[in-house]
Structure formats: structure tokens, C-alpha cells
Image (cartoon, rainbow, N blue to C red):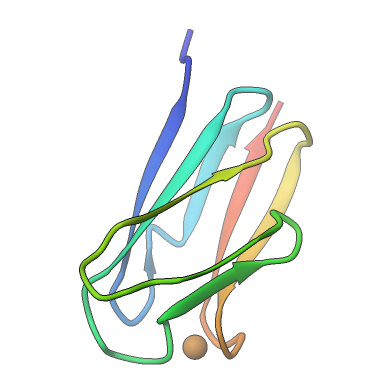
Amino acid sequence: MTAQQNINITVNGHYEPAVITLKKAIPAQLTFTRTSTQGCLEHVHSKSLDFAMDLPLDQPQTVTIPTDQTGEFQFRCGMDMVHGKVVIEG
Ligand SMILES: [Cu+2]
């Protein structure tokens, strides 16, 4: 039984990994670390996961996301050009 789901995402012109699969009802955190000035990825946001934050270079930023619903939830860069998604499975 996993008590917590902690996912590290590297932001390096894109999101890696770009697809993150999580289990429903287990608390989850995403930690974004931007390691490149490439692109317009200094901001990340998600309407469906209800977060928005800046990503200072080489400073990991962590957000807690809801896991109460199954489905696919997109997150995007500041200009909505680069996408990633969280898939929550039951
Ligand atoms: Cu962008």
C-alpha cells in the first residue's frame, strides 16, 4: 500500500515524463524542476488540477494535487504550448 505518490518532473523544453499515472485516493505531489531556459516553461498551470506556479531555474517546486476523481488532467506551460497530463486510475 502506497501512502503517498511523489512524482518528479523535469522541465527541459518539455515535460519529462509528460504522462504521469497515479492511483485514485492516494495523496499525490508533483515536483517540477526546470533545468533549461528553453521555451516558455517558466510557468506551469492546470485548471483541472487547480494549480498555477512559477518555476525558477533549478529550484524544485512542489504542488499537491487532488486524486479524488479518476480521469485525465492536463497541465500546460504559460502560453499553453507545451502539455503534460496526469492520468488518475481507480
Ligand atoms: Cu510554453
